[in-house]
Length: 78
Ligand SMILES: [Zn+2]
Image 1 (cartoon, helix red, strand yellow):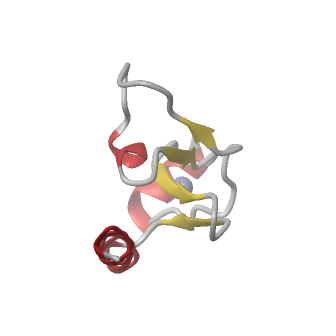
Image 2: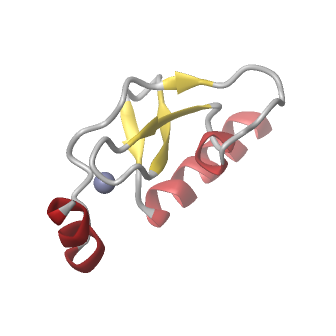
């Protein structure tokens, strides 16, 4: 509870994630998973983040999201 409050006021560093969850079909799609089809949840604050299986990394910043979308567009164009 105190840790949650600290997260709210000082920001969570998102250092612990759940195992990546891959979404199938269109049923109940969290926003975070829409980007890569896979997402992880922060075990401390519960936020969800897109996860890239190929790169084995969490996409947790807006600039990374933009980069990811840009690389997807490049792959589709090629
Ligand atoms: Zn967190």
